[in-house]
Image (cartoon, rainbow, N blue to C red):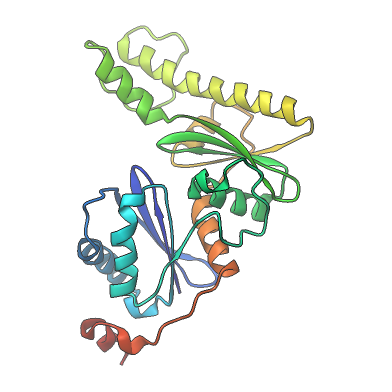
Length: 272
């Protein structure tokens, strides 16, 4: 089985793929001071609850935009799963050309999204990821990565409003009943929801005009389904795009599987 780890600025997502389907997905808040042992205590308990064993994991792959988190995630793979993890980097075999000025600067999540979106939906297309940042990434007809746009994420905008304006509360995200808010919270919710719908529609329109050909639009991230309710621009939403990218990247860049006798005693006993 494959353990895929997607470490973002807000959450780290762990997922197990058995070669045919995803068997489980779990997330924990990103903290750069979290040790490999802390990850292990939490993750091993979740594996057990889902009928999975650490010994079942033969390969690991990590994609992260938080360099400081990589050390302990790598140690987790080495010490508790006895697997040298594949780290998503621009220098790997992606199966497509990265047509930007500095490929090494592109976040791993953006390349992973491009890889999986082209594999499942075929280009040309735009992938919109509603995460800590809202990213728009352009994929050509042959899968080549053409670059994109980075905007502040929805949660960042909400937090900025709350912190910068003394009388504005911290709000939840939801689709308001009307565009015109008749009190503070509905007015803020309208500004956030319809503001980001307008951002999506405006940027996608400009991308299409610049590209000069029809494009598919795929949304991902936890807020994609909510934003898709407000606009026909997003033709599809897919929550597993980044994880799928990790799986596809691991298949394209195989690494050796270590001998299981290296497992810690408590884990090796499970294989006997």
